[in-house]
Amino acid sequence: MHEVKLNNLVYRTEGKLARLTLNRPEALNAFSVELVAELDAVSQLIDDDREIRVVAITGAGRAFSAGIDLKALSRGEIDHAYLVQWERFLHRLEAVAGEARWKEATAAGERYVHFAQELDRPDEVRPIPQPAPKPPRATRPLKLSVTAIEDWLRDPYTIYAKHILKLGALDPVDMPLSAADRGSAIHSAIGEFTKDFSERLPDNPVHALREIGERHFAPLMERPEARALWWPRFQRIAKWFSEWESARRGNIDAIKAETEGKIAIPLDNERTFYLSARADRIDLRADGTFAVLDYKTGQPPTGKQVRMGLSPQLTLEAAILREGGFDGIDAGASVGELVYVRLSGNNPPGEERSLELKIKNETPQHPDDAANYARQQLEALIRKFENEDEPYRSLVLSMWTNRYGTYDDLARIKEWSAAGGLGLPEW
Image (cartoon, rainbow, N blue to C red; front, side):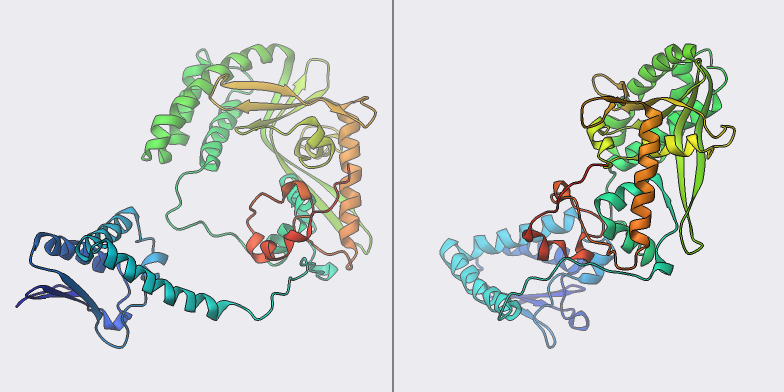
């Protein structure tokens, strides 16, 4: 007989029998990172020992095993190496058992899986209605940004959860870099460059923008995808943006970058709603009108989506401008252009897209008229939700039923959304 005692495992051989005892009774023998590593190491011993024909696995204490260690999972300790070691351990057991016995063992295990599923199976499935919370007026928000208005239009439940229940989303455990991280770095670099050189471009704008970009990308550069993909893309963006900026400066008299604005919308019952915005950029053009610009690292919305109110950011920023909500711009100023500047770093690295809006009969809509219309529709939306009988429903636009939102689990969308979508009115 041969015995090896590890921190979480006891390994004993008796002729052709190998016995593994999971030895974490205080944790119900849950599979921690260390226990799985020990199982992996011991399975190599079993694989090397040609005498062993049977492997018996037991658990010390009152339980065989509680399964994966949930505390280790919550701390982010369950990583790729853990899964590799676990798979390797199972494959070695399969080799010892042989194909026929392994299939017999897994089939027996399926029996218990079936029992577990039956315990959770309800006697009757009753679909729930779409949630429709109706909080009192005093709790309904009186201050939102233009970006939150988009959530309000598409998914009022997001406003209820985030701004009324005050539920903030938690980052996933060991969250990888995302497109939002890339977009934030690009936005910050472009915004800083535009603000620092709003009056006069540097002699070498490409070099200056890349230097600024290095600072904003620095926290991300430890990740290989940032070094290999994102930074080269930004360098292409810097070259394109510098050329575009140099050409554009000839037609504008002043620039406001990363500027904040706000307007007040009086309501009934002595209540006032405040709409705020942080505009990426506002240009005073040579003809005395203003251009409102928004930088996009993803796909900009179409004119139809803006017109329908699905992406009202630019038109609402224009409305704030026309009411004098941005410092240094008088009320009544005219907006001559709404522009999305797409910054992808691909081919082409950047693209200017002037927003062309058309009303139902295909008549072009001037940006001033679009701003006024968006302002009117927003006030109608605000007043609609001032009514305490108006619920904050989830996912009111059927075209977004395939998306996955932050509060979809809370709204239990998968339990009721099979009933179908709702209509889509045009702003």
